[in-house]
Each structure stands twice: as structure tokens, then as C-alpha cells.
Image (cartoon, rainbow, N blue to C red):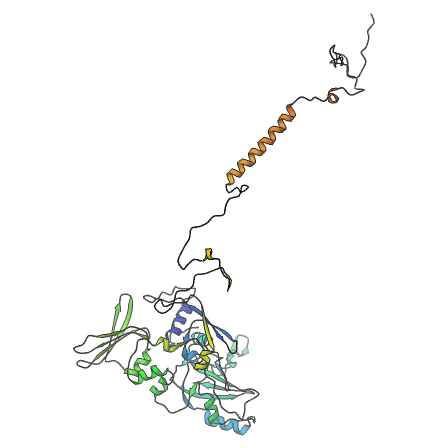
Length: 465
């Protein structure tokens, strides 16, 4: 369930929530924003042979963490150490280094290992359940629970209501039922959960070691709000905020930490794009106009007395804040890693050569000299030579078949209409009783037709007077 009261720290989370809300019910139209085609990248590590397929890039604050390297004790956790950890860590305050999602599952951090989930699943969890704390926000460890091989920390009250299971139980007789837990009108929980896992059981840790293991997610150092916020950003962006500079692509939180509250705010519409102009400074000092759309700076204009205004509209922050979901790697690892782009790859015509045309040849196959064409060149189409028995015309082939069939029928007709010259066929069969007539020339008998009253094969009757 998505509530309107959620606040999102980056544009990607807000866009996903809008897409999830409007799916199947409405059409999401982004006016004035051109969405580039997505590209797929396959990363191959030549040392280990691992192949990873990444989708669209995500905010680097959702990327995989760099594992810690804390030496852990060999002995198991005893009762005294467990009570000491509860006494020191419960109600301890710190600063969030990563976005903390709501939800019962929460984040799972392996001791000296990786974070689960990370990358796209991490962003999906924030999109589905909402944010409990943004990077740089103050958080409190409200409860600590120990299991066989993990320690569970409840952040800002935890993601579940109190008496979670008892709320489903009612007692009574007949129609008179009373719930075990009376609802006091409290709202939904807004806390988070962090689970610290160990291999083979929880060792006998000190509070300092636990804080060091949680350092990628929570910083327990004493910091000012601006220090806690800028420590979660890339070095270049952190330096710009500390120098009170505003760059295109910054969020409103970054602008507030860099410049503070503006002297004036003006809301206008440029075409079909609404925006809000934050104005810093007064004449004769330089005046800075920061144009904001949604939660991002889309234009910065600096006006100085006696000089032409300087306008900046190129986003320089997105490349610093977005990554493919993997932790930062060193130069040696970069040399052993090769990235292959697939799908709808966007090419810069000023810096990248055009893609090779598609071909049906196998890798390493050599084409004959007559078949080699340059890129963009075309040759006349060569049709195969027609053989004598080929009939490219179907109608002509049908007429030829009909002609052969007519000739065969004519020959059969001539054979049936011609007189027979075989004497064996013309002579009567012996014993048939048919009269014959002898011709003077040949002497051959000629059959006579029977007279009235005679039947074939019977002798003529004689009548006496």
C-alpha cells in the first residue's frame, strides 16, 4: 500500500512509486522529459571469470557496500557480555549512511561481508515499503534482540506494531468478541530493521566492535547535520556543498545544506513544465536563481552587476550519484574487468565510432573478394541463371501441363475411332449359332440378321401345308 505521506530522497524512487500507482489504472506521461533507451551491460572479470548482468543504474547509496575488516573473537557470547551490549547500545543514537526501508524483513548485513539486498532489489524494497530514514538522518537503536547467529536491531521503533500477533486474537462467546489488544489509534510504524549475521554463532563482541561492523549503515560518530549528510555523498559533491555551490542535478536537500533557505521563492510555468525559482542574494551582490522541478535542480543562473548572466543547464550530479549497483573497485581491478554493452546502446557520434553492420559470417570467416562491400556501399542484385527446365512463371507451367494432357487425350481418341484390321476379332465365335453370308470375292461367310419368330441359336422351323 502506497501512502501519500511518503517522502522520497531521490527521483528514481518517486518515479517508481508513480509507475506502480498508475499501473493498470492510468497512463504516466512525462511532459518535456526525454527518456533515453535502456542499455544492458555485461561485466566480465578476467581473473575470476564471473559474469554479471546489470540492468539500469541506481543511486550509489543503494549500491553494494565495501566489506569491513574487523577481527572477531573466537569465543562465543556469554550472558554477561550480552547484557553489557544491551546496556551500552540500546537507545544509542547515530546517523544513517544509507536509506533505511520500512518493512518486516529489513536489511541484512553479514559481519565483514556484503549487504542484502543491494542494487535494484534494495531500491525495489524502498519503493514498495517507503523510507524510514534518509541518508544523514538521525536514528536511534530502540531495541536489540539476540539469536543463535545474529543480532537484530530495531531502528526508530522498528517496522512492526507492538503485540503483532496478539492483534489477531479475540476472546468472547457468541457474538460478543473482545480483541486481546485494544487499538489506541496509533499510526503505522515508521521504523526499520537491521540484522547483523555471523558465521557459526555470535562471538563475544564489545560495543565498539559492533559499531564498527555497523559503520557502512550507521555512523555513531559525533557530527553536525551537514557533516552527517555530506559524508554519504561522493567527494566532489561533498566539496561543492561545503563550498556553498549549487550544481544542476542537486536535490533540494543538497541545495538547503549548501545555501540555506532562499530569500524568495517564485512559482512559474515554462511551456507545460511547472517549476519553482529559488532566489539567493540581493543587488549589488551576485544574485543566484536556482530553478527546481520536482525534487531536482534543472537550471542555475548567476547574475552579476555589469556582466552577462551565466546559465548552467547541464546535469553534472547524476553521473556522480548513479552506479551499476556494485561497490567501487580499484585501478587493478578495473584493468581486469571488461564491460560489454548490449541492447539499445547509446553512442556518442563525437567520441565513438558507429556500430559495425550486421553480418551472417562466422567469426574469423574470410569472404571472397567479389562479396566484400564497403560500409554503406551497394551493388546490383544478381539473379541466378534460369535453367531450361525451370518454370518461374506458374501460369506457363500450368498451360504446358494442360497442353500435354490434351495431346494424350487426342491420341487415345484416335486409337478408339480407327477400324480394327485383326481377322480374329471379326470372325464369329464357334457355337454361337449366328448365320453367316459368303461373299463371292472372298468366300467368307457374312452373318445374317435373324428373322421374325426366330431366336438366336435356334434352328428355323418348317411349316407343312
